[in-house]
Image 1 (cartoon, one colour):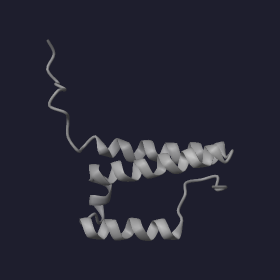
Image 2 (tube, one colour; image 1 turned 60 degrees about the vertical axis):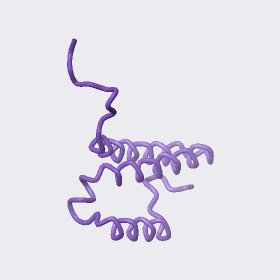
Image 3 (cartoon, one colour; image 1 turned 90 degrees about the vertical axis):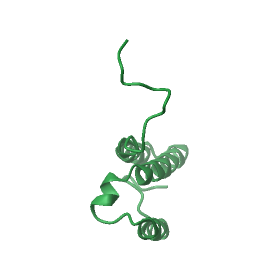
Length: 88
């Protein structure tokens, strides 16, 4: 929780790599998968909260910025049928 940048623990990296392989998220699919973006965004948000609670605001902000990047990919999952792009 003391890292000033984005967390990259070997144990979590191993889990992430196995998930990527299992789901077929390789090369450009890593960048375009909305589901992967959502999963990784949640992870970085949680780590950011932990860093914040451990009084590491610099590390927390780095995690939250990374979470935002990841969540921006999750927009590709789909839209709710309740939301419409039509203008009245």
